[in-house]
Length: 454
Ligand code: NFE
Image 1 (cartoon, rainbow, N blue to C red):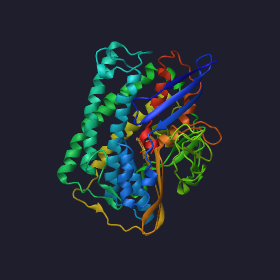
Image 2: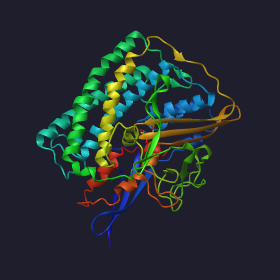
Image 3: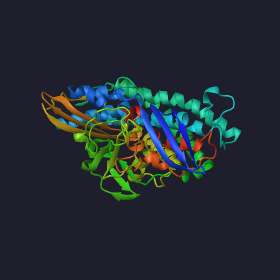
Image 4: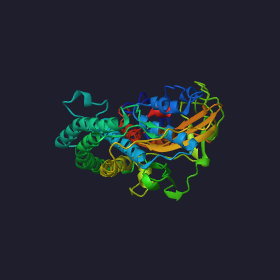
C-alpha cells in the first residue's frame, strides 16, 4: 500500500517550503514533491522601471543573498552598456561577495544544518523537533555547541566587512552599474584587515575540522541523497585581468560538457503559471495562476538541454577542480566547507590589493533599448538575470533563475523530477514520525524558497 510523509514547513531554510513523499512498503521513498510558496511577482513589478532600480528591487527577493542579486542586476545593466568595471571595483565586489559567502556558509553549517545531527540536552533554542540517530559523544556535542555560539560572532564580523564596503548589510548600496560607489579610506582598509584574522582562524580551525568530523561520524551519508552527477556553475568572483575564482562549466553524469546559455529553458507544466512552457529566459513570461492543475509549486523548472542540474558549492568546486568527491549529502557539506576555506584564504590578498581613496565609479549611460544578461554564483549556486529594455530605457522584460530554482525545481514537462526531488528518491526512512534522513538531504542543498519563488 505504501504511505505518505509530509513535512510542512521545512524549517531551518529561508522561505516557505513543503515536502511530500510517497513511500513503498519497505519505507523507501518512491516519489517526492517539493512545493515552494509565497509568490510575490517581482519579474512583473520590474517592468516599466529603470535598470538601476532592478539592482535594489531584486535585492528584496531575499534577505539572505541580496548581494548576489545586486551583482547580477548590475552586470546585466553593464553588459547592456558594454561597460567593464575597473580593477578596484572588481576587487571591492569580490571582497563583499566572499565575506558574505563565508558568513552564509557558516550560517548553513552551524545554524541550519548541524541541528539535524545534535540534540544538546540543556540548550533550549538548539533542540530541534527530531532527536534520532544522534552519534556524537557528549564531549563532541559540547564542542559543536560552543562553536555554534562562536559562529554567531564570526558571522557578525564578516557582515561588518560587507557593510564597510557596501554601505549596509543586507540590501547593499554601493554596487551599481558603473562600478562601486565606495572609495575605502586608509582607516577603513585598516579596519577591514583587523577583522580578517578571527574570521580566517574560525574557518580553518573550527568550521573546517567540524565539517570533517561530521563527515566521519556520518560517513553513511556519502551514500545517501545522491544526486544525478549533473552539475552546473556560472563564472563568479570576477577579478582584474579577466581572472575569476570560478569559471562557468557543466558536468553531465560527472562527464564534462559545454555549457550553452542558449540551451537553458524553463518549464512550467507542474508550476502555478499559465504562461507558455519551454521558454528561454530572454523570452520568458510569468503569468501567475495559483492552483492550476497539474501544478504543485511556484517554482519553474529550469533545464539545460532538457536535463535538470544541481548547482551550489559542490557544483562550483567540482566543475572547477577544487573538490574531488561524489555527489551526495555529505559531499555537499564538505564541498561547502572546502569552498569557505578557499575564500577565507584568498580574501586577505584582495583586501591588501585595495588602493586607499581610489574612486572606482564611472557615470555610465545605458542605451534607450537593448538586452543584458547578468550571471554570477550566489552561495547556493548559479544565478542569472535576463533583462530587456525598450521605450526610453525602461525594463520591458526581466527573468530571474535562482540557484534554488535549479535545485528544488518540480518535474519538467517530461515528468523528470528536479535535483532535490531526485536525491530523495530511494531513501530509506527508519522512523515515520521522525524522517530525519529526508531533512538531512534537503538541508545539504541549503535551499532558499524566497529566492526561488519570486
Ligand atoms: Ni535567498 Fe539565493 C538562492 C542564494 S539567489 S538565498 O537560491 O544563495 O541569489
